[in-house]
Image 1 (cartoon, rainbow, N blue to C red):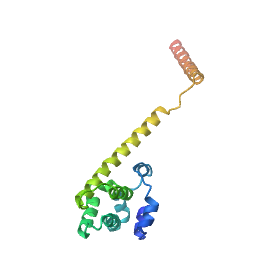
Image 2 (image 1 turned 90 degrees about the vertical axis):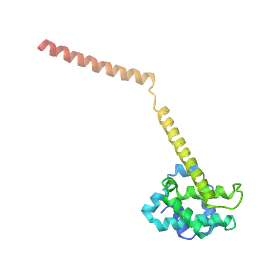
Image 3 (image 1 turned 135 degrees about the vertical axis):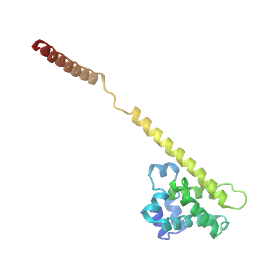
Image 4 (image 1 turned 120 degrees about the vertical axis):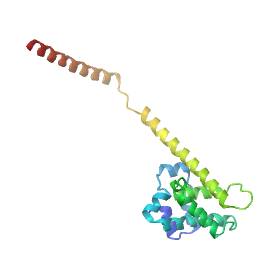
Length: 178
């Protein structure tokens, strides 16, 4: 079971979560290939994942003096698990998004709309980070191909020349026999 899901289901404190996941960045999350909400639902069940997400949303709400009521928390949780895009985020990405919201300039009360907008923005940032990583891996693979030295190239070409000469000699003997 992934660490965040394990800690939430074990009812770890808010402080323990902050100590464990406070240094998360999108690059770390992408590099660690953490399972998505959709994958977690498949493996651990809908209710386990929804309850874990509800804990994260409730924690966010308490940071804004309980602006979100129980129905709003449930709505955000269901929006994440039902959305074709948002269910591709990991619990850690949702946690990171909520931590960023806590320190953002939010005018007025925290609402379902503001949370979903932040999650959609997080999805865009996550997708861009994955694309950047994939591009960098491609470039690293492309340009880090071992280059042959002149000596290695000379040996390779000499070997190819000997093969070609042998082939031509065999072909000439076949022509003489016929």
